[in-house]
Structure formats: structure tokens, C-alpha cells
Amino acid sequence: MGVFAGTTAAACVTSSLALTPTTPFSSNKRTTITTSSSKCRIRATHHQNLTAFPSTSHLFYAKSLRTTKPRIFLPHLIASLEQVDQTYIMVKPDGVQRGVVGDIISRFEKKGFKLTGLKLYQCSKDLAEEHYKDLKLKSFFPKLIDYITSGPVVCMAWEGVGVVASARKLIGATDPLQAEPGTIRGDLAVQTGRNIVHGSDSPENGKREIALWFKEGELCEWTPVLTPWLRE
Ligand code: IDP
Ligand code: MG
Image (cartoon, rainbow, N blue to C red; front, side):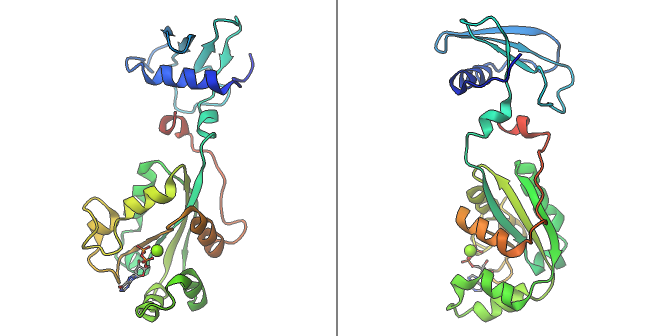
């Protein structure tokens, strides 16, 4: 039994299963699904316990009409075809003081992104100035540096497909009064100068800021067991 390597056929398996809303994941039944467009016949074996999705799992079997040997389908191979980005999220000193760190982390966790770095940190003036160097000429810059260095912040690195843009949406507009309800700033803050959270504004800045705030060895590479339940 070999690893499923053909991406066209893999996509066929993925789309076929996605188009079969009645496919149960709770029994040990073996189901055969035939699609006319893909010319593939899919045989799915459903196990009772799918909590861990080990890479050797026989969760899905795909059988091409031309071959007789069933092959293992690994969902995470499909996800790896898309660009994974990193973003730097920081709970600012007001968020720490107000006790909303857990709420903020929870929103990113629940959304389905992967936490790869986390620490409580009292940052220096130099680091705050480097982080916000693009705003150096703004009149509010000195107050911004005082604000960011006024107490510990919570530094986080998050990873995922589309994580930078999605995190900005979860955070909401810079001015909390303009931020939509349901966003972090929309729910938890009232003023731009106390808007409780930072999020990188581009994938490039995500990488730059993570490298700025985290030292080598502080980030953690790991594989969440929920991955196959979040991305097909
Ligand atoms: P962002 O945090 O939504 O990306 P930026 O324009 O990058 O917004 O500004 C960085 C931070 O600078 C803001 O989150 C806020 O804390 C602060 N800031 C921005 N504009 C003002 C302002 O007009 N008055 C005071 N602080 C500001
Ligand atoms: Mg910004």
C-alpha cells in the first residue's frame, strides 16, 4: 500500500468527498462513491475513532479505475500545496492589564490557526521603536512608544494559510469605535491609543516582526491533531 502521490487524483478524492454531505464519519461502514466528472471511484472506510488521524490511518482509500491496488489518501498533503504564512500578534499592555489575554488567544485558536510562539515580555524602548519604525514621523509616535513599553505585552506567532489577512479581520479597524462588533477591538476597546492588540499588516512584515520579537529556539514547530478537520 503506497502513499497517494498524484495530486489530480487526490483533488478528485477531496472534491468527491466534499460533495457527499451524507458521508458519515461515525461507523465502520465501507462506502463506494462514483463521480462521472472525475472518472474515479472512491472507496471510503469510516472508522469509529478519528480523533488522532495518524499518518498511517486507513481513513480514506482511493481506487483508480485503472489500478486495482488501493492507496492511502493523506489530507494534509493537499493543505501543503497552499502557501502557509506567519503573523505576529501582540496583546498590548492595556490588554494584559485588563485581563483579556485569554480571550484574544482563544479567538485565534478557535478560528483554526496554529500557535508557534508565545511569551509574556517587557519590551525595551529600542525594540518598540524598531517595531513601529514606519510610524516614526507621526505626531503620536512618542506616546505610542510610551504605551507599548508601559507594561508587559504578550508576543505571539501564528501560522496558517491566509493568517495575516484573517488576523487583521479578527482584530478589526485601528480605531476601536470604527471596528465591527465581533472583532477584538470592536468588542473590547474604545480608543485608538488603547486598542489592545497588534497584528502584522503583510506576510513580509509577519516574518520581520516574528524575527524581531522572538529569539532562535523560542518558536515551536508542531502538528496539531485537528489539522484534517480544519482543511480538506
Ligand atoms: P494598526 O495597529 O491597526 O496596524 P497602525 O496605523 O499601524 O494601525 O498604527 C499602529 C498603532 O499606532 C495603532 O494600533 C495604535 O496603537 C497607534 N496609533 C495609530 N494611529 C494613532 C493615532 O492617531 N493616535 C494615537 N495612536 C495611534
Ligand atoms: Mg500597523
